[in-house]
Length: 570
Image 1 (cartoon, one colour):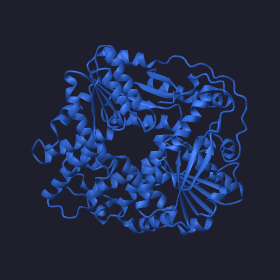
Image 2 (cartoon, rainbow, N blue to C red):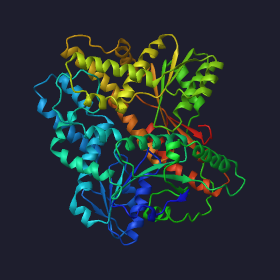
Image 3 (cartoon, rainbow, N blue to C red):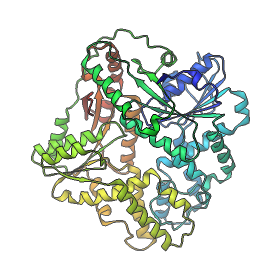
Image 4 (cartoon, rainbow, N blue to C red):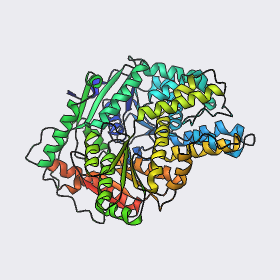
């Protein structure tokens, strides 16, 4: 595997960086842009990431119209706001129906247009201009995009059915996207943008991953989705690769071993792709100087031990507080790879030791070791088969669509591939399991987002008021929503890492739950190097950078947080 250099991507006009949150795609996009500008080229860097921290990196305000970066001649940065764009898009679609449809129908439409997929559509609406603008193409040698569209978004944009007006009595299921009529005049621009994206002579799509199993699986999923659309011009960059440990530090050896195991188990299709790597750096990517060093060298300075962190709780403290409060439903939630499944398992074991009758539910069918451990401890397991419940839900949606007289199923089929559809299908099965909380404590790995809860809630209301019936929202779902909103019964635990993107994403999860009327209090910060007391200078420097984000979590949670040390099996 070769090290990533500018020469590997120099030939392309357009570069797209994509990957799951926290893998370093923004840092790599910035480093690439700065390196190209330092070579005397004119570069435009565009971010559509809602968690973008470009202002912090460049230490100046970044506008949506373009800002010249001080100290980097030739670099212009644009920071688009996809959330604001999604708000404007949602209102453009819903506004014509205000006063014509009942409030419940309007609420249903608004929630359909409040999901992450809608934000991504709105973001693509913005950066498609830069991807198709002839003046920009002439003015800049390279145009770099931080965050690329998913295959689901690109397929949706190409469906003629998706551009029709909003179906007033749409009861085929709970959509995460709604219709795209508000963007109809831009169909030609989208078509050209997608063509440019797939043109290997112009564009390179760079999949950024960490040398970790979850991140590599996500990169593989994204790669396969895009290949099915004919986007073959892909490059995999593994960010944060450790060299062999320089001393006998046990933690450094464990981290190196863990990375090598993840790479050796890489999905076969991904392993065949052209792959480059960026070495693990000991410093934060929060200044132009540090970003500039990312692709050149790591001038490591001997780092003193970090100051100790106090005021945090242990996981046992959290488990005891949940037991003493008599909570009957416990959710762990967070982005992939933060360790929420491990925390769910530890919560179940701890509550069982305190005498609770525990039912543990997970959507990870490959979690055999945890299931075996749970059963040995006397914990009941209910492993949900995501694919099975998803297909059952899809069948129900198709049946309702046929009964409603729908003949063109292309939009419905694409909507059924959306992330929210899977979440809703699994959530319905969760609801059935949680009905058992009257008699036992139910611990659930992976909680529904606030958007999914509100979408189900608005659909239920729509069914009752428009169809004049109880609708076909399952009884278990109708009974579950009030229980989840009752903080005396339910506990939602957010799991994160002591890094910028995971903390910002965790904050969005918290806001999303609160929007749905869900009280959220406790966070668990996993994989804290600062607690391992490593003797390795490199890891000491990494640990020191965690302090800022741990303090941010302390502030957000008002002291209701748990810290966990780095561990290979988390």
